[in-house]
Length: 224
Picture 1 (cartoon, rainbow, N blue to C red):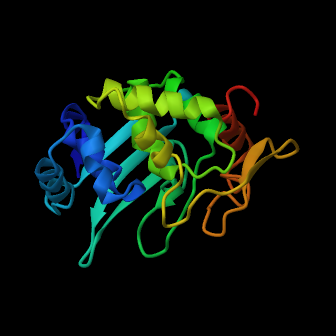
Picture 2 (cartoon, rainbow, N blue to C red):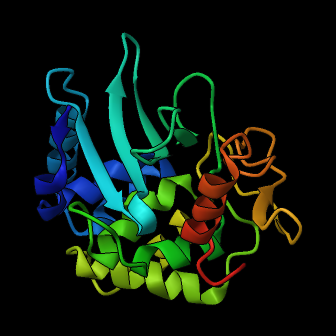
């Protein structure tokens, strides 16, 4: 794998990264040449240089987003890690044949995009939002979400008139769609009702108590 950070400066990257979330006819809504997007997709599928993006979070946690090309197709995996955990990481979403997602609800995503992080990686809030958007799947997305996604698209080179695209991107990944979420006060965790979601039980419920508590504070810094 290679550090994907340099790709974020290329406008066609976002149309390629979010390609599963919109109809192909909307590619020009990103303000880029469709041919350039095809070229970027080929780069993302290059087995010799799979890009990986690290989103630093609080307490030493990170979310990793990386591409993984198999014999038949390329999947995108999103998981949260910590150097002290005995496990390799907790999967939030994956577009491989197992179809895992959604992995984030809107309150979590809204908190994570602007939360201070430890270490290097993707720190720009707009880039963090768009990188994690495929892992989102929430039936109760507020109106402000459209504004935030639109601003993020514009900040990354998109045209001003991209509100329709922003709304479309918030519908959820077609592999699992949007799902209902509820906050469990006893578990201090968001729970997802989606059939394919890994969040049907509290995330990291197998971790030691101290690590689980730190993870809760990382994902829900405002307490839900």
